[in-house]
Image 1 (cartoon, protein in one colour):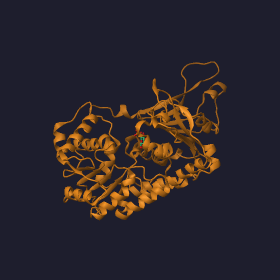
Image 2: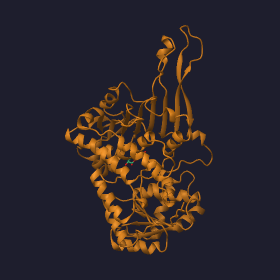
Image 3: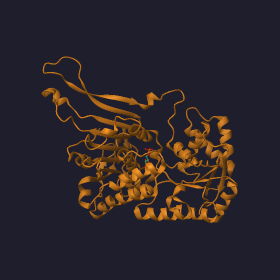
Image 4: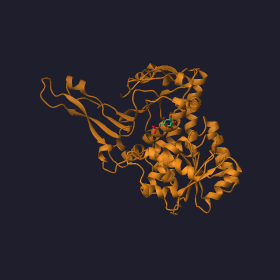
Length: 489
Ligand code: BG6
C-alpha cells in the first residue's frame, strides 16, 4: 500500500464564520493539544473580512477559549497552535484571493481546502483554485452540506467540483459520521458476533430512527426556510444512520468498501409515489408552545411571515432487498420537540410461541435494542426476565435492560467528548475518506428525497401545525400506528 501523504496546510474558507468559530478552530486546537497535528501543518484562514493574521489569531483564541471550558486554554499548546495560523483577507472566488493563498501556502504539500462557505460559492471557489494552479493532485477539498437542494442542483455542484478535483480528493462532510457513537454502530454490528445473525427480517420487526431537537430554527431561518427538515436532516444525517444500520458487512474499513455498501442501501430504498407519500410521510411546522418549561416562539414568528417549510418530518422507509423485505424503518426528526434525543431503536419480533400461562403471556414483550447516540451515549438490550417472587398464577415476567453506558464505561479524569469535526479533520489530514460521503451516495440520497418532495409538491401537502414542545403533529402517530406499531418514547 502506498503511504498516505499527510497534509501540511489547511485553508479554512469562511474562517470568520460560525462553523469555523464553533467547530473547526476548536477542533484543530484540540487535535494539536493531543499531539495529532503534523508538526508542519499550517492553518490559513480566509474570508472577506478585512483583518490580518494578528487579528485572526485573536479571533481564534476567543473562539477556542469559549469551547475549552472549564479547563481553559493551555498556554503551551496555544503558543504552538497560534504559530500555525495565517490569514488572507480576500474574496475566495477571485484570482487575487487565490494568489494570496498561494503566497501563504508556499511549498506546503497536500493542502486541504475546507469550504465552510455557502454552497452557492463552491463552483466559483473551485475554479479560482484550479486557475491559480492550487488544485494539484495532492490537494484535498472538503465540502459542507448542503450539496444542492435536489438531485439536479447537487449534480451541478459535483460536476463543477469534479472539473478541478478528482473524486478521491473530495471529502463531503456529514458531521454525524464524525460522532463517536455513530462510528460505534460499526463496532456494535461488526465487532460482535451476537447481532449479525439476528440482523434481518427473520428476527427484526422494525427499526426506528429519531433525531429530535428542542431548539427552534431561530435566526437560521434564511437558510432553513429554503431547505426544511427533509433536506436539512433526512437527506443526510438520517439516511447515513439508516445506511449504517442496514448495510451489508463491508469486507474491510477501506473507504470504498464501506461506501459501496451504503450506496446499495440507498439504491434499495423504495421510491415514494404520491399515493404512498400521503400515507407514509408527514410534515409539520411548530407553532408557539412550551419547551423545557420555557415559552417557545412559533416558526412563523421567527420567520416573520407565514411559510410552508416543514420543521418536522416523519416517514416510513422500506428497503427492498432480501435482508430487509417487510421490515419498515420509521424515521422522524424535528425542531421544537420535547427533548434532545438521537436514538435508533431496533424492535425484534416476539417469541414464536409462548410457553407461559395467561398472566405471564400478557407480560411478554419483544426484545429491543435501544441505541442512544445523543445526548447520552447508551446501548440497552431489553430482555425478558422472571420477576422475582412468588405469584399465585405461575411466574410473572418483566423486561429489563442489559445496559452499556459509554459515558460511564469511559469516564475518567481526561475523558472529554470530542467534537465530531476532530475525527473528520484528522481523517482528511491523513487522506482517509471512509467517513465521508461519496458523490454517488449524495446523489442517490437526493434522488430518493426528491421523490418525497415532489409528491408533497404535487399534492400540495401542507406542513401540519404542532405545538413546540410536543412530539409533532398527530399524523406522525397515525403513520406508525397504522402498521400496529408505536414510537419508542
Ligand atoms: C445540522 C443541521 O446539519 O445538524 C441543523 O443543519 C441541526 O439544523 C444539526 O440542528 C444537528 O446536529 P447535532 O450534531 O447537534 O445533532
